[in-house]
Length: 264
Image (cartoon, rainbow, N blue to C red; front, side, top):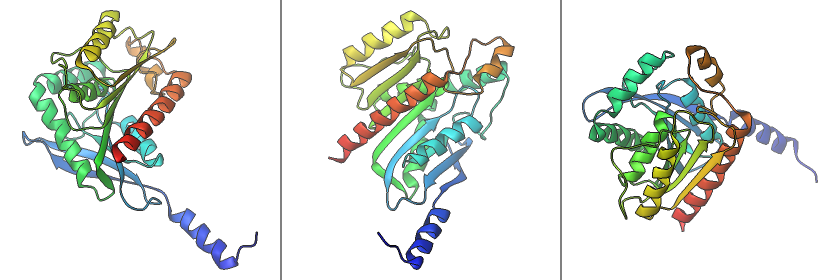
């Protein structure tokens, strides 16, 4: 097959300019708190594509959460890492992280409002197909996206990675509209076996479209390459390349199936 020099130059130029675009976007929660979103999309894709909210770990909106937004953009999604703490704050100290998390979860309605504010921001982006929306969350963020599914927030699907599973607001029959995927480490000491059993029973009773994956040998934080550093702080966290890659592949299949169904 023969290519013209002009054609090759045009193709090379297109590849050179097609890349992941990112920007920080300020927004405001219902309670007036200033929030910061981190938005990512692939400018090589024309038109709208499904949107995915990313909810950070208990550390806050840090580089890891932003990286996951870029990873999702590379898969072809319109991705927004949202801010659940306000001012885009984050920390490396467990005591601060616990304080931030507890404050964010103290009022379930306020937490939902903060998530919804981020979801609304994602909908406002020109690249987002507002009929196909999902959310993924890590650790604290895993609990957040599960709670949003429990409360019937209009999402097609949610994915929890090493998330907290216990909740004060349980799903009831018919309340879960989103498909649900939970990726959980079998050796996660921060989530009790009873929490796992109760979540499974809850989702079955609610009639949810629900999948639970137990990743052998994986501990809490298994997706985050920086997790091992926190062992020095006495936290039972550990990165697992195998569990990270397997859970990411599970998520890709899940989101594709979910959004394909929504498109029909």
